[in-house]
Each structure stands twice: as C-alpha cells, then as structure tokens.
Amino acid sequence: MPNPVLGDRYEIQKQLGKNSGRRTLLARDLQTQGFVVIKLLSFDNETEWDDLKLFEREADTLKNLSHPAIPQYLNSFELNLRNGKGFALIQTYVNGKSLETLLQGGKTLTEAQAKQVAKALLEILVYLHGQQPPVIHRDIKPKNILLTDTSGDRPIQVYLVDFGSVRAATPEENTNFTVVGTYGYMPPEQFSGRAIAASDLYSLGATLITLVTGTHPSSLPRRGSRIDFGQVADLSPAFADWLSWMTESSLERRLTSAQAALQALEQDQTRNAAVAVVAKPPDSKVMLNKDANALEIIMPALLGQVRLRIDAQEISLAQKRLGLSKGRPQVGRRQEIRSVTYTKSGDAPRLAIAVGSQQYELGEPQSLTAAELDWLAYELSTWLKIPLTKS
Image (cartoon, rainbow, N blue to C red; front, side):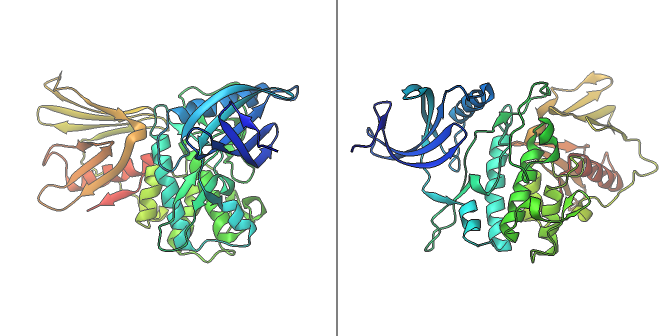
C-alpha cells in the first residue's frame, strides 16, 4: 500500500511523535527527494483556539529565522483530513537524537560535554534574543535539543527544535496569556505568563542540571528556592556556581542575557567575583542614579558633561559642551549589550561597553580617575548582570 502524500508533494514515511492534536511526521519531499519534518495540527471539536494561535506563531517565527542550528521553515498550508481540516508546517529534517533519548538510555554528560552543549545553545540564544523583538523559546528541555551523530572525529552539532511555545518579548505585559512550557524546566515567572530572555536561561540551566545528574529537576531536592544538585553531580565549583546562577528563582539574582551567561561560562566567572563591592570615591563629582528599570550616569567633562542612560529598551551616550549637545548621541538596543570591559594598561585606564559592533566609552582621557572607573565598572557590571572583563 503506497504511503499517503500530503499537499501533493510530501510522502509520509513514519510518525515521529504525537501530542494533543499534533503529530510530527517524517516525510520525503517528492520534488527534492530530501527528507522533511511535518508538524500537523488537526482541527476538531477538541482543538483549542490557543493551540492554533501557537501553531501559527511558530510558523510565522520560523519564517524570519535563519540559523544553522535551528530547523529551517520550508512551507505551510491548510489541508483536508479525514476528520476535518488541518494545518501543516514543513521544516528541514535534522538527523539526530534528542538528549532525552540519551537520558532514557541511562547516560549522562560529563562536565566538559555539558559545557560544550551549553555554549552551543547559548550561541543560539544570543541569536534568538537578538532579534527585533527578541524571540523567546519558552520550552528548552532535553527533548527539544538534538545532537547529530558524534561518532568518529566530527565535532558535536547541537540543534534547538520545537518552537511551538515561542513568543516575541515585548515591553507590554500580556493580560491574556497562555501558560506554556514544561514543569521542572519552567522558571517561576513563566507560570504567570511572563517570559523574557532570562526565562530561557533558567530552562537551559535546569536542562543542563538534568544532563549531568540524570535526574529530572522536579525530583531533585531544594535548598530554599534553589535546585540542590551538589550531592548528585561531581562538578567543578565554578561550573556548579554558574548552573545555580542560571537557575535562580529570582530574576534579580539570575543572569539576564545569553551573552553574559556565555561570557561567564567561558571565563569561569563566579558570582562572588562578579559582585565584589566597590564604593564611590568620596571626592567624585560623578552622579549615578539607578532603580530596577533604568541607570543613569552623569560624568563631568571639559566645559560640559557626558550622560550615559540605560533602560529596558536602549542605551544612549550623549555629550554636552557649554549646555549645548555635542554631535549626535550614540544610541543602541539594550538587548545588544555584549560586555563591560575595564582596561587598566597604559597611562589612561578605559571603561567601555560593547553594544553590537559599537563601543561606548565612558569618560574622556584623564577626565575620570582610576578609582572612579573602578566604581563605575562595578556598578555597570552589577546592574546589567554582566561579568566584568578586565585587561
């Protein structure tokens, strides 16, 4: 009996998965003869409006993404099924195994392997969270991470799949929301419908804890609000601290960006090193104002001042001379802040914020003392929750 063909083009080979009105199918594209994945949503009396909304959002999101570690959108269409209508989403096929399959086989990852997976996924998240508006996956877990065949000398290739829970992060909070995600891997804020970049970091951290312990996060003991995995996994102090940092229940204590998390991981940065308190020099004329939503620094300069402001949306650096604006201010997206670097070498220490491909330098040469730059470096690193780079 011949295999069924969807859309006069896609010959079904087998079913890969099934979940509440959705089926995931492996098919052959009769035009290209290559394999594709079809996600099929069936419309029936039990289909919820939110299911269709999430399905359409996944298709719309994938159309605008282009990353080698994310399955590529190929096509989507409505079709007639035996029990009514349906909606099909066609994606490129990744010939790999999920990390959930690895766990079900009784295997766990070493610290080195977990770090390799973490770096690969953080690079994907840097890309997703750098979109406009940022794309939040909302369902990172072992099942949604694929590894290609790692036999031989080929490097491991990590893929992030299943964008069925994806949403765009916007400044406005949703009043009508759908709680999506997977228990154990969801951060607390996601239970109330809120999802930001740091939410994906929590899910990634919980996933990595599962991969090194072989135990679901909900089955691990708790120390207060933290996942207590120290007795189950043999990890270096720096990596264990980094995982705890990623999975802080409080957003105020959690790493806030994939770029900051990647930098902290690569530098073995611990939280204690990142938050060594530096006080404002008593004779400084620099003014700093901050709250949970914005930070502003006003620095004296020759015949004027320099003003740095960072809020939830953007970063701006502007100069004034004799009360008049000097040139156009530098303006960038808060989401693109990559690092805070303090350079002490040479005669004049420098403090710079990397924003995308731009550098925002604080203070003209000799206008700020080393003590003031030390203090501002600490304040910026702490408020942005980005590890400070010193050179």
